[in-house]
Figure: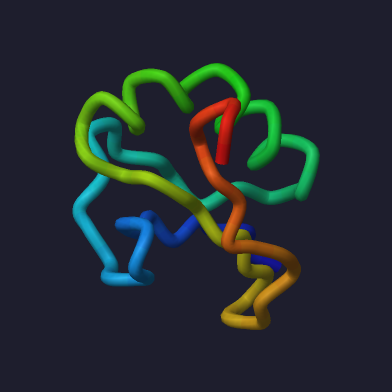
Amino acid sequence: MAWTWRFEKSDGTEVEPAVRPEEFTTQGDAESWIGEQWRDLLEGGADQVTLFDDGTKIYGPMPLDAEG
């Protein structure tokens, strides 16, 4: 299984992340990574993220800012 993030603007348009993630082997690893990188991702132009497991949407979009 490969856990991946999709990075988006608030309108759902996909954007390139400011920080390049890997494919994660567990959901916990993916969530830990986003918890460490969300500020850099937000500053780099991503407004929200969606989590996928082998191409299946798990949840999202989840806003990266505290007020979203």
